[in-house]
Length: 489
Ligand code: NAP
Image (tube, rainbow, N blue to C red; front, side, top):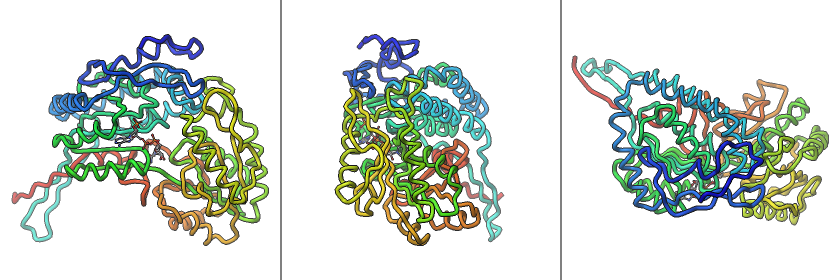
């Protein structure tokens, strides 16, 4: 367990010290080991504990024991604790960024951006938590006085993916705690160190024992089922693939647990002839290459109108070719490794399939020989709409370009997917952009912007990209229940 940390990480502690066990009721609880692999080197960084069903039940017990005290804590006091979480994240910014890069592989610039974004959820919900209002109304009949109060929903199970190890956790924990709920977080087994480092940070900020519990496991199915089957658990907030989301929705039905689902995407990035070319290219690089393409909001299909197509493709190839691929801890690298060997193989299979259906490879498209899970920045044109990558998330640095002439065809193609998370539109005509954005079936649209994530905005999808919203004023409502009192005053 005590493998010394690689010396060139800039981290003050060994990886093991960030995660000495499961974090249950404020204690570090030992368990069997799960290896955490550095995707840049394929070396094992640390072993984290592997929770059993019994550990999961103990975590629910701990969350239950803390629930009454936390929900009765005055909102102002909760808010002050959340604000301390924000300040501690900013204080430990560089350390957290390096830890994210180490276990996830993303570039340091991306990791630093993630820590800032993740910390913002604490600041935002420290501010929102003291402004939860009730409602009062006299019924139209005049007989009934309607009083509505908002109560914490209860114990929450939070499950997060590996692509944003800090932000996906704080986007759930901050509003849950602001609402007065206690939680059990199950982070992805590829990137648990950040989640455990943050558990220590919450304790340092004054979050009472048992309010946040963190468990990792190699048996996510049975461990989650054990928690959902406990009648005290009333909320499941999941971020991950649509396939696992579907399974969890069925599991949650057994005890009728409230579900928020942030699932997969298949974002179209539509460039119209009248777009500002440089702005569209800037946006394309962010929408495609943030996190080396490993983002649910990543541009998955570039739809480019005839008149600007060739100039856009030229610019995209130049910019993608200029990216340096390598270990994320190297400051000069913009494109780190993918999360696993399996992820690289999936990307390669999608590219091979597209090429077999006529796609032209203008850049990249070939596996790299280095150690580590690398895939090169790749640009494909003439991609067939039948290619597998047209419907599947690529989740890597591959930009497929599709040409269109007629805007109605572009909208129909953009909507021709079971997903509906994010879309990007580039046009100089903002009125037209707003009109088109209403016709696009997604929860979020970037209009002349390649980035939609913002702690102050409602993040989420329609269709099979999810249920509910995270962030903004909406995010806290996912962790509150309306209590209606009927009275005659
Ligand atoms: P994933 O395979 O669905 O895993 C997500 C989480 O679910 C992990 O913690 C995983 O644990 C856990 N899990 C897997 N099977 C489970 C089960 N049967 N019961 C309970 N938990 C289970 O997704 P991923 O590969 O980590 O993440 C990539 C996906 O997340 C992409 O589809 C991406 O679009 C989506 N995503 C969506 C958003 C959004 O906001 N909409 C944001 C980020 C990512 P283990 O790691 O232990 O398997």
